[in-house]
Length: 216
Image (cartoon, rainbow, N blue to C red; front, side, top):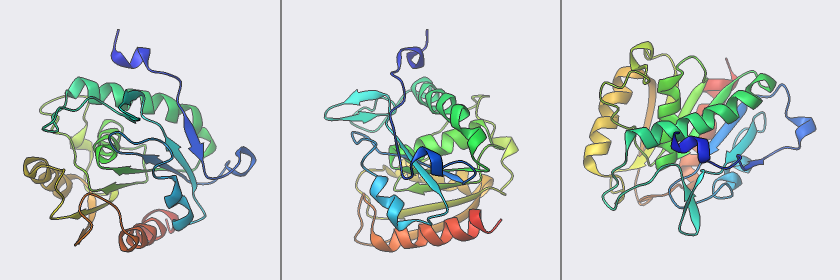
């Protein structure tokens, strides 16, 4: 039995009531380590209203919050645990996807690791990806990561602060190599943001979603 089989039923917060969701593009928010589904939902008010926003809670308890997969103190992780988390999100997404013309992923920190993993496992399933202060996982030669099918056409926004004290240099370096090869990248560096999100970045994300998803 995989870890995913013992995960709880998904907990999701929505930006719109159920009767207003069908037919609108879906934007899925994936929070960071130790946070919860409420952490990013306030961003919904700052992003294009055409989207239905769904903020999903990670399935594993971590301190007062939740995590998508276990992390060590040096931010290391098990690839199998990452894949279990991805399967968990995919199962939920498959249940709501028919209601929406497109699905876009927005992940903060560890949530970015999950968002890029989801894209790499099902390259045709997502309109765009937004990664904030995070990284992409090094999947080695794992065949469930279909990187060869990502030919640089999926739009991706990656925002970060070069002084981010959390995401280690090796992860930034791997992510840099991966994004340059596999997505249509919009990369913006911020100062004084550290490991966080600021107003300027959300403005850029809003523009990216408008031009990269809504205008297509």
